[in-house]
Length: 396
Length: 221
Image (cartoon, rainbow over all chains, first blue to last red):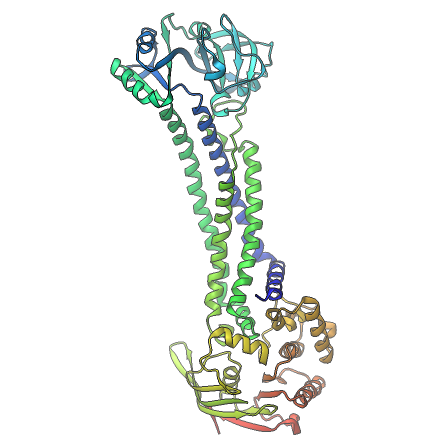
């Protein structure tokens, strides 16, 4: 291997990028934009997927909801006792929850008020949330609440504050803030207002023997499907969801949104590649002549392809690195401008940072997408011009 | 020794096949300075291109020394051009994005010669051709005569055994013609083989010329 020759070709390729600045920038700038867009979508989508996976570990094995007139409604606590009798069921916890449509400073917002049965439940083991500041609710707590980070920011609420809530439907309540959740699983926790089940019943007007759903824990997760089937057979007008089904639902929703964006920007990537091709295939004139002259001066076709590929590699690396970095920063900033679409719940106010997850697989994929097509697209025309007699290439 | 044996070359011009060389045979000994003369389109440039491996022949055989090179693969021909041939193009063919010295040094890049040595060698040749002050000019900033001299310097940078010159004096002013002829004379003295084409007979070459070959309609007459 003639190392000095390859060093020379490498240096020539670098100098060529400076020589033909306008052409280089015409490729690098669109590449940065495309790679930034693809990467922030990929990182955000990865964040949702990771959140969904983490949360799955904390979800009840089975969730049971009541159905009235084909819509999700209240469920009677009589079902709780029946489900507890099913073999392999370890615990059944009733939950009362609902959405709060609110106006905060004139802006629409939607939060979730969730009432938990605090008696006999070790929530530290069962829920994905840990308290960042303050403490969690304990049995007997009334008119106290633990807030998700999004809610705390919206109301500018801190531990020790009293929070008055009145939704646009007329439901009212006043709670003392005793804790604020951390943001480990943002998709699930940011909009939460957690209170005791009694307070939630009172807020939404539920009777003593009613709940929104029942959380069923089995003795082993692999038994969830069997237990779910037993519950389904037990009564009509109920909806039974396993943790896997719930996680798949979340992944499906965010995955599809992410996929829509990726498909859109892949189309843009193709457009950029066509632009690059058009530039390289401008080979009839300047580039073709340059290749012909270089061959006439003793360059081999392989040398010319090597130089063109190094040029593309440098442009691809620069464009992709800058694009991926910009995309990552944009994702970290919460994808301002399009976070509503990404999250699918645009009315959450004011801030719900889109979770970001970046791993080596995503990075490798991004760099392959950003560099390989560019190298191929530039090498092929160089090769096509290189295999023709130099005289023909110079004449054009 | 360069030997062209019954060489015919067709060009495709649009849909028409043009016969640029018609059964041409010629033998040029090492160290000879041969002039190719004849009207435009008579086949002089095509023969230079054939000898310089810039175009493949349609029929016939081409020898370089004892080897028949007509059917050598592309990378062997590139290596021969790189190591044995210096080509002065009629249209100069300097690359516009490069400076004069960079253009001159281009044949040395695939030979693995460092940038420092390339520049030193290019500057030496540019000085001989009174072009040292234009070394850092972009090629397209040079006048026609300066481009011609830069093209001559580029053809000589790899110290080739064979120099093929297509109308090397056509764009050069009178003051610089003497310099170029002087250089060609020195090269001949060093045993280089020189084949040069001229639109009309160049008397300025005088005693340097060993032989003049006349072309007409793709044939030697």
